[in-house]
Length: 118
Image (cartoon, rainbow, N blue to C red; front, side, top):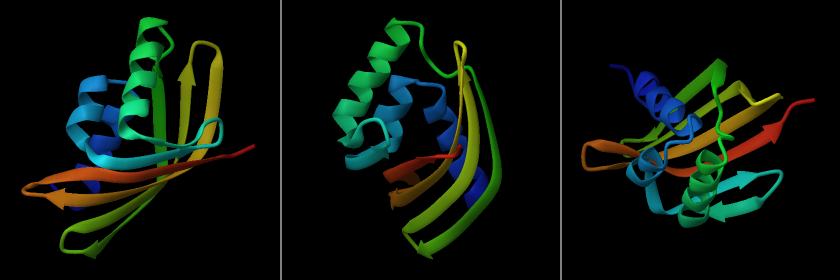
């Protein structure tokens, strides 16, 4: 499986609001940056995911397009793409960028940033 495919598999697992995926795929020091919250850490992200799932407000459909990936080093990689996602009656389109670091044999998310597209 290519590096891009590996990273996209992780991104899709995170988009479906699975708190177990967040614990598994984010490093302890991870930073996530969203327009509505600003920068948040791993624990705040996991807490928010638990709340969204409890309220039945998780993403149900996510389309990822315009993917660009690159190896930054043997243990670091970048993934950027356009995502259109739906939950309840809300549809959002964002430009997303993630930076991954390799920990052992696994790729872990260190930074994720989203910019809304009007």
